[in-house]
Image (cartoon, rainbow, N blue to C red; front, side, top):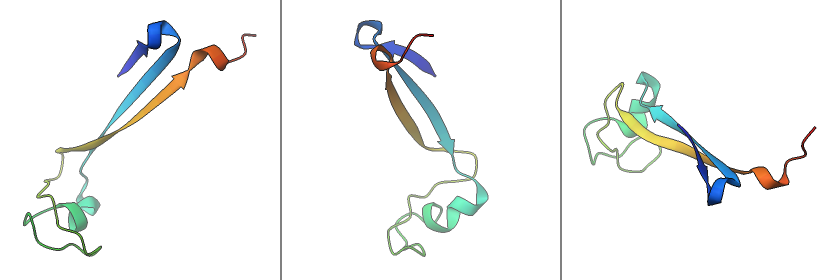
Length: 65
């Protein structure tokens, strides 16, 4: 997803992150159990949305060529 923000002076790019099989040792089931990192697992399943990366780019600072 890409959208203009700040009156069109910036662009925000949003990239969804889906759980893959190798993510589940830390983020999978059973929910609440400690994963290999020592934190509680979220109970995610392969293919589910796990999060997103959001980047905001200030277009007013870019040189026009």
